[in-house]
Length: 110
Image (cartoon, rainbow, N blue to C red; front, side):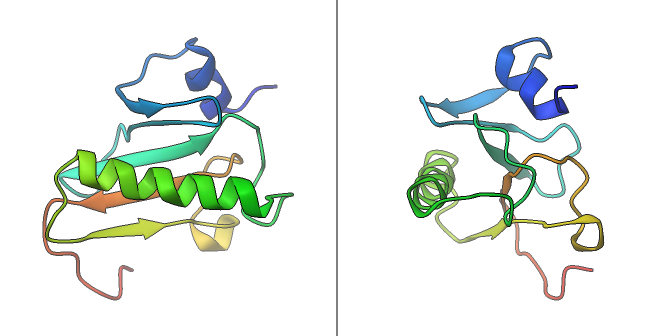
């Protein structure tokens, strides 16, 4: 069964896309935790960070996260988060990067 993100990538479920290329798609989170909360998701359905990610894909996803932050005007700073596994807060079994910003972000997050 396709993951939620596979269904978003295919267009079956609508999303507010802010970036896409042949490798990944970036769209706004439907339950944002900051004024700007974008998810960068590879088109290749990897379950998590430790699920077969190669260096080229990892680098591309991080470069897109940086590009999205610039595009969204996060000049004062932003946070990049990858949750891995249930205890790490991952709720969709498809690797994704959170780009959060638009306000001062505190630490620890929770």
